[in-house]
Length: 383
Image 1 (cartoon, rainbow, N blue to C red):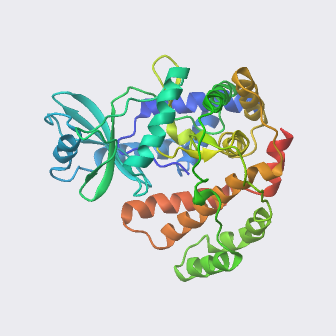
Image 2: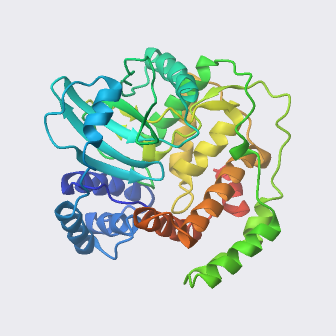
């Protein structure tokens, strides 16, 4: 489930609703703008469009304020010059909050990152991003600190900075065929780079919690009084069915892949191009595993988007050879979904703070409402 930015724009939301209307009319020709607005409001956890507008007003009136001195410390760490305006909040994500910084040298986007995103990990992402930009994929310009680092520690957190880029809102699902086609082409371009990688696949994509741990998670949810604990328990048979999807990924020829090219990390640029904003998750995969995972993000919510899946494949074929897919190809996507769901529910049960509580609660509800299932994966294959 989506979380609104800290200072949401009704202009962006209207653009998202119009884009969503295009996608809805591809499957339901009689869809109206009101239908798209209602669907979009639901994506943000709101009952209807007026409720969403009221939440936009509330958030803009009660936007977070940067801790004293934080903007100055980030600017100093990255050599951005003297801060000339108060930092403006952009959005909160599981990694932390991002801020709009203005200095006497320009405008910047600064964001906290996960602890495991080290300078070394950021360099891996930069290697793929730089090659991708040369090949025609749009991406923001990363800033290096005076030390030459892409990640710097500020107030005991890892931070990275990009040059400010004027972009539109992220796509919403279901996406239109036009967007899906362009995303498919972007994946093919990245895979065509075929940058070899000797590092193992990230354990987050290979290790799963056992059945006993999922049962314990239900008990924890009930003890915490979560109203969706019963929904989680009812989902367990589907979870354990997903556990049966497995593949042997040893002895695979691995290449550097973005690993997280999902709707949340894509924006529309001024010229209509799609801008890939996140590269720090770059790691070892195969085109088969990454394409399978991509289809779950771009073609599975809220229900299987057959037209988008076909368009994604057509876009991919414009620049690459489509990998052979079977149910086992979704192995890593299944593991990622299981771990993300498990961790989101853990965070919702015992949040670190109020902001993370809101995000985790919404995310848990969305994951339970639109779960990954074996049947849905088979439906994607059928498309």
